[in-house]
Every structure is written in C-alpha cells, then in structure tokens.
Length: 494
Image (cartoon, rainbow, N blue to C red; front, side):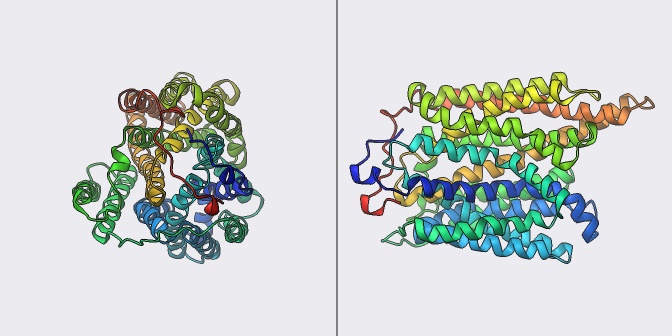
C-alpha cells in the first residue's frame, strides 16, 4: 500500500523511533478511556460522590475528546503536527496531575474534560505524523499494523493497568501514570519529529468549527444521556436532534466553504469512506463488549479489578501478533476488503459464542476465553487495514483532519454502541426479572440474560459492518492500485 521510496527517504534512521513514540502516545490516549473505569468505585468512596454523578467522570472525557477531534486535526495541519503533538502531550500530563490531586468531584470532572481537550490535539497528530513519516516507505504496512495493534489493544491494557494501580497503590495513580508516559514522550518528540507547518497557512473555517464541534458534542452527549437516563428523556431527544441538524448544516457548509474544515473529498472516496464506516461500526460493538465482559467477570465470576484486566490478556496478545502480520503478509496479497469482511465475520462468531455459552455458572476458560480469542483475531482484521486505508492518498496538509476522522468515528461509534447496548441490556434484565419473579438466583440470571442479549445485538452490528464493507469498499485497494500516498521530501523525513 505504499509507493516506491526514494533512496534518501527510505534511509532515514529515525522512522522506527518515531513509530515507538507515536505508539506510546496513542496508547496513553486510548487506555485513558478505560483505565479510570476500574478506579471509579475507589474514587467514589474517597471523594463521596453519588452513583448518578459518577458517569460524568467518563462522559466529560468523551464529550471534549469526541467534539474537538476535527478541530485538533486541522490545527495540526495548519500550524504543524510537531508542536500540536508536543502541546497535547504536555497539556495531557498537566491536567492528569491535577486530576490525580483532585480534592473534590468537580475538580476531577474538570480535569477529565481537559484531558479530552488535549487528547483531541494529540490523537490526530499522532496518526497524521505516522502517515507522513512512512508515506514513501516500504515499511508503511508494518508501521500501520503495529500502530493499529496499539490503538486496538489499548482499551484492554487500560483495564489491566487500572486494576494493577488501583489494587497496589490508589485510584489516583490511574491519572498520575500519564506523567510517566507523557513527559518523556514530549522530550523525545522535540528530538525526533520535524516541524512541517503548512507554508500557505490558510484561514481556519470558524463556522465549520462551531457546527462540527457543536454537532459532535450534542451527539455524544445525547447518546450518553440515553445510556444513563432514557431514549425518551427531553435532554436525550433534544441533544440528538440538535446534533443531527448541526452536522447536516456542517456538511452543507463544507460544500461551499472556500477553505473547509473537512474537505469532503476525504470522506467521499470509497476506500477511505468504507474504512471510516468499518471503524465506527466495530467501535459500536467493541466498547460495549469491554463494558459487559468487565461486569460479568467481576460480578458473576467474582474477579478483582486486576484479575479482570489479566483475563483480557489473551485477546490483547493476539491483537499485537495478528495486526502487523496482516499488514505485511496478508494485505499485499488479498487487499483491504476481504480482510475487513473476515474481521466482521469473526466479530459475529465471537458474539454468538458469548450469546450461546454464558450462564450464571459459566467459567472463564470454557465460556469466556474462546470468544476473546476469536475477537483477538477479528479486531485487527478490521482496525489494522482500516487505519491504513483511512489516511491513504490524502494530501500532506490534510493528513491531520483525515486522521481526526478515524478517532471521531471510533469515539462516536463507542458512544452510540454503549448507549444502544446498555439500553438493550437494561430492558432485557427488566423483562427477565418480571417473567421469573420469585425464583431463586433471579438477579444473577437476569444480569447474564442482559449480557447475552447485548452480545446478540452486537453480533448484528458486526453483520451490518460486513454488509457495509461488501457494498462500499472497492474490490481492490492493493499496493499497485491504491491511491498515491502522500509524499515526504527527503530532507523532511523523520
């Protein structure tokens, strides 16, 4: 999926060091979406906030991150990815430190929201830096495979690390740990990454910023409210309706804007549009799977937070093994479309395994592990080629906003999936309790029934992803026929 490199560019010595740096930064952003979940009970006991309030520790991060990603990607394109990336790292470290020191619930929520702001600078900058660093290199598939493995497995790594830090130290270290990652990464960023600001420095599309950020904020907020309140509540309905109106207005404006925030040709391309769709649909299922399996292992199997994190390790290890192998060995031979369709198929199978096997008396080895293994093979089949394809062929100074679309699809997909499947879970539990009232162990059985129902619907989402990949993705997006990647002048190669 890369053109032939120039001799000078391919000899650039620091590409793999840059990849390691970007992978570490991406891991920090992704694991922060789950690492705090494990620490919530301890934080709640320490700071004394209510059950109704605790969702805001998760939602504040998701709202800021999801609504500002396109803006963060555009800032990197205009003012230089190096300094946007560096600012994101330092800012993330500072607000994480404040969150770790938080004396009150309000300070903790504010710090989580600011983490989302700096994460929206950091995440698209990391992927766009990867795009331009390996643009003319034969190692592009391998680099994207490694990066996709980190991005895909980061959520389960967050569960493991969060459980370890909470059990051994305190919940506050789930925030302090970002300093250990971000500050050294910022130092190496100054040494490794080349400044590449857009010399023409076009103006920012401020109307597009308002419409896109407002629309994404309203959508993520609406689905978050649906997950914790109801689909018919006034705030849910108004937020979702407003979000749709703003995003439709954004698309209409982007067709007319002289210097659009998101040039529509980026998403109109079938290969990139199909990749964005695959990321969003898979995100709908995967985020909820982590949530429900975490609850099942802790509440039904009696696992501690640390043991729950360890239970996800087989899937995590498989992701790290499969993703680079797919990109380097399989993708050049068969192309993107068959691999993504295979990943969606494996997603369906894994959900059916959970649906068929989980019971109140299930064990980890026979009933949970097989589904995790299948998922560990299927997820890289979706995310690794999608990450590479989503930024393939874009102009050098549009790589940031194209990368932001990857993270936006993942974030919005996760919000939609969590809200949808949480609602289905709650409805299934309520119906089961009503039908089996008075029976022994009805609560545990009802919870498992809710999980399996959610997994069944998640399987349907993967089936939808299979159909979308079949219809939308071009037949071949191989090395020879792919759109020409962005070019990196030899003197600017990292």
